Amino acid sequence: MGDSYQIMITMIAYMLAVIVIGVAFARRANRNSDAYFLGGRSLGPWVAAMSAEASDMSGWLLMGLPGVAYWCGIADASWTAIGLALGTYINWLITSKRLRRYSEKANAITLPEFFSNRFHEKSKVIMTIAALFILIFFTVYAASCLVTCGKLFSTLFGLGYVPMMIVGAVFVLIYTIIGGFLAESASDFMQAIVMIIALVIIVITGTTVAGGLDAVIENAKSIPGFFDFFGIATPVTDAAGVQQAVDGVPQFGEAGVYGLLNIVSMLAWGLGYFGMPQVLLRFMAIRRESELTTSRRIATVWVLISLTVAVFIGLVGRTLFPTALTTASDAENVFILLSTSLLPPLLAGLVMAGILAATISSSDSYLLIAASAFAKNIYQGLLHRKANDRQVMNMSRFALVAITVIAIVIALDENSVIFTIVSFAWAGFGATFGPLMLFSLFWKRINRAGAIAGMIGGGCMVFLWNLVISKLGGIWDIYELLPAFLFSSLCIVVVSLLTAPPSKEIEEEFDAVRASGR
Image (tube, rainbow, N blue to C red; front, side):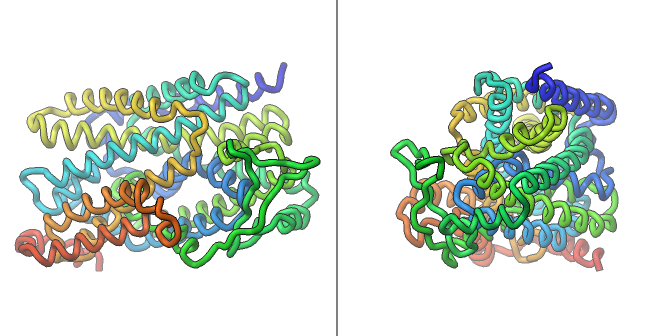
């Protein structure tokens, strides 16, 4: 039996296991919209932690981050990883318990619903704006997962990128429709385990084949700026962005400077966690607030191991296959190249299932949250307030199909760089919802006008900075999340202070939530 077929069999077996989980949870998930969208607040600490991190990291962890390290060295990848690790820990530490408590007090099962109920809205403006931003950014996020599927299957089996991407999209869509949040969280728990096993297998095998840890590090040091936290490697490329090689040796120019502004820009990735719906929903869904401390420890350990190993895989790939991946987009296949080259086919199939696991665990979360934003918050909350649970769930399935189709269109370009797509969507959520979440939980003076200003200001600034301001170069060429997060915070504070304070009822509710956590 050919290697490709053995890999395919292993991956099909894995996909069947995921479908079985979806079917197993289908009856519980379809009882009502609360069970379908939030699992009835029944997640245990292990499932909450592992599913949050698996849905957060996506195929970006196994393809995007190693690809960045392979292409230009450890600086970009490592400072991003450090920012994400810090953001993970701080978010679980300061946000999780109060959000669990406040969301139950506000009787909210989605993020837009929480923000709307937090300010006792009647016109549902906050809910509508939040739902629209979720639809926009999660559709982009889902597209990044479909790019991962297309690259994975086309690289493995030599088939066309577009049909393989569509196959992946259809599989994820069917699975998400069947099982809802409970199935998604249960399978994400399993997929988090598969992901970290896959990473560890590849880094140990690759390092051994490369001649050991010292050999990998020495090779990285031989490339200008490659193994430097304060410098960055600059591949010599032609007009098409293809790295040049001479006598089998990849060509690099002089090391670039990686200064304080670059470091702060990458560390800013950690700010995104405060506004990330797929993580925040796990805080809301855990069965008991007291279990969040255990979840925080589990999530932090998983993230530290996974991010460290993912960055190092890029270095291992550059040592073993220095000229195999010649563009920034191709570099994101380094994990696949190492797996198929170094492992027996059946084990390679299991490791490839790690990429599939990462993709599924994220895309099902993105699709479900985006569908809930439309069905629960726009359809029922705004257009048809008397809609019953069955109508809401049917509308969510319609939304799932529509969002998937749009994501497929965005993902049609096989030269898309996963890291770039993810970074934009991450900035969008971080700036739109991050400051609003923190101020909503910890500042009594924030009012409805400030909340609206913060969301619109942060979300729009992401687009403005990415598409216009960053093009000016120099000090302006920083990750859009940082300036957009700061601008959103400024909008919230200024507008809240210039307008009427929140009602006495809202302030009393805030005090009650704060006091109940002491």
